[in-house]
Figure 1 (tube, rainbow, N blue to C red):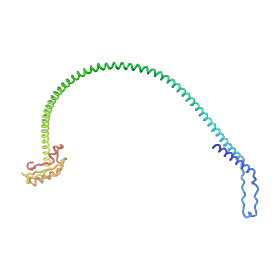
Figure 2: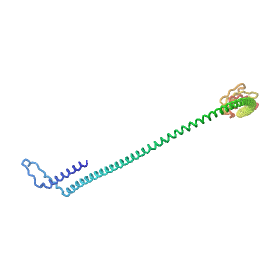
Figure 3: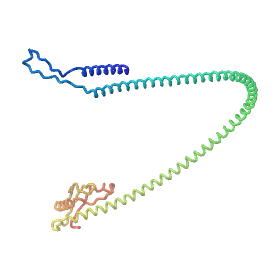
Figure 4: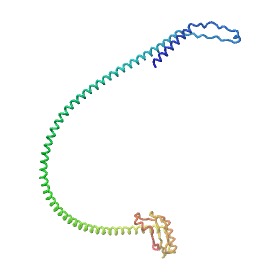
Length: 305
């Protein structure tokens, strides 16, 4: 590619030189002669172009410099290629020498190994013969020892089996007695525990019932007092009269319903109005005690207040 560039550059320089010679040698100052047919048309004069020789020379020098630079670059590239080729050649030679040296060492070691293997083979053969004899004697000794050990083991085994059977019989008998005693003790403990739990349960139930009755009586009195404080009485119309009412309460004490039962109508209406006037009556927070107040029946006799 660089060679083509040099050729093109040379042709370009040649053409520029030829053009410069033509422009310098030509005479552009002579006027043009007009022909008879061109008299009616005004002809403009041709402007001659004067080439500055210094600029032309500078341009030529620039082209020459480019050519010289291109040649220098090409020479440098060729030298670099030659240098890389020489380096690669040296590396190949060094590698070949290294491989040759390795091959020589391998062959030497292989030869040494063969000699060592042969010697080891002879040594192993002798050791094998000696080992065979030793094993044979050891096997005979072990056989004799095993026979004696088997006889002893058999005798000890029979003794151990007899002792084990006796120990097992004693152990089972002792375990049976222990289990029977433990069963009797557990039965007695369970009986005492059940009795104690039953007595504790009765005691707790009695205490709880007494507590509940106390709470029921207290809150019944509080509810009655609350209603009485809001009851408007009239001795002339209520004396000697009474009314039984059933009050339904929410857990908060809010009165959800009042049902009048047997009794004087005036007294019943007065008590009912007093209850609705209060709206919320005192009730126990204990859910179990409150069950007794969910529906509460009360008897009111105003002349007893």
